[in-house]
Image: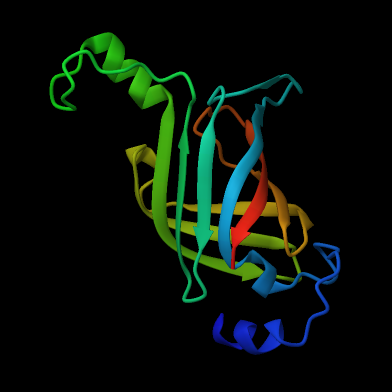
Amino acid sequence: MIRYVLIAAALTNGGPVDAKEKFRLQYLIGAWSHGANYTERPDGTRFEQFPGQKGMLILMPDGHYIHGLVAGNLPVVASGRLNALTDKEALALAQGSLTHFGRWTADKRAGTFTVTIERSSFPNFDGHKQVRQVIELTPTRLSYFNLLSSAGDGAKVYVELSKISK
C-alpha cells in the first residue's frame, strides 16, 4: 500500500497540506522529533504526562514504525543497574517513559494514520490499534490527536512534531 508513496513523492511541490483533502502520505514518512505533547481530559483540562519530554516517531516507507517518549525529569538510578531499582525509581521510570513499535497505515480520505502496536513498554497497548487524527501535515511539521491515551478515561493526546529526516 505504501509503495506508490515513493513515486508520488517525486510529484509533490512541498507546500502545506490540508490534512483531510490533500493528505500526502509521503509527508508522513521519516523521523520526527517531539515538540508539544499534552493530554486533554474529557472536561477540557490539560496536563503534560511527560514533563520536559524528548521523543521521536519514525515512520518507515515499508509500514513499520517506532515511537518513544522520555520525560526530562527521570531520576538517576542509584545502583546504576536497571535490575536493581528502588520502588520510587521504578515508579518514576514507568510513569516517565513510553515506547512502542509495530506497523502503520494511513487513510488519506479520513486524514488519519493508524498504528498497530506489536509491543509497548505499556503492555496494555500490545496488539491494539490507535488512530491518530492529523491536524496539520507539511513536509516539516506534523500535529495530531491520539484518541486512545494511556491516561485513560477518554483522554486524548495532542502531539506536535518536527521532521528531522526523510
